[in-house]
Length: 420
Image 1: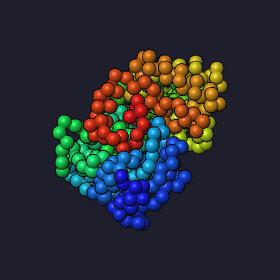
Image 2: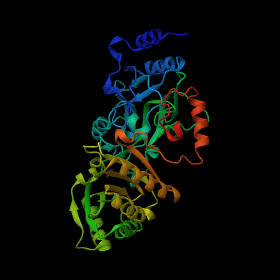
Image 3: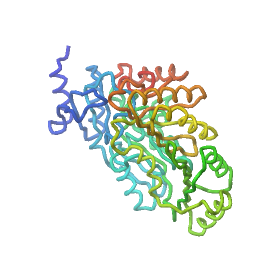
């Protein structure tokens, strides 16, 4: 049997003394403190570390910028944090083909700045772009209002390279190195929370930067009024890029809409918007409005729950009214930003017992109608509150895929849906 010291020495030898260290309290993952942290410099080093950890049956926690490390359930075990901090290069920007290949540890902001040099962008507005890495964004499937126009993250990623627990570096999609027959790795790993493999690089389709942008906002009298406007805009000839409703408990409700076009095109869109929703209420606004989702994460978070909603666009008003009905009697305050697609972010604040009761009741009501509520952040006192809710019929297939790719449950054990 391999001793603990022998395992440690083997892992250290792969990356060198400077890039292997004992974990500290700052490396804690949802209350679980790992033993070691390793920072590989290449895909091959990462794969070797993962293979050695898998062989020794120690649990691995992948980490990029750490901005979403608390998302999901606490891990059942956490021995080795495997950081992608040194895998941070933009490998190839094929600007003529509108594609880019980038390592998993590259931050979204760094990638955006590189692409902007050629007038292009990855049409993705993830949280904390200055710190969030490409691998972490893909693993948590984090995207914002731009998905209305450009599609979900799964529509933007066209290829990934993945380190599997057995040490295999498998690629699928664009510019293939090695295929894993039968699996669409880009779609399979997006939103899998690092439970199937560790993303080492990704290839994305790109879009041109807009000529000009213009944002407008208007107030809605109540949730049903906001939903009516959103559905009318969606059914109109308006070529909008993003559309959201934002507000707070017992507060004003606003609808925001973003246009991207030439100046002449923007003037035409503005005129049609004013005709559709009424001239008096529409006001031109600043780009900072699109940071409303980011604002839900502002400190302090000690007495807050932040969650992700997924409902039908035609059920937005019903959901917001449900929130008022359940939260107000328990003195729980809430703020929200809900996209026209029905995906939304929700922040609740109040006493711990009240927070848990509201989350569980709202989740139950939503799930009964085919919707969902995923808890992304909760106070330490509510650590036992399940992040995911009901796992649904897909859990059997999900467990089978996990068993196929990570049979020893080496990667992020217990963090995903159904304790995967």
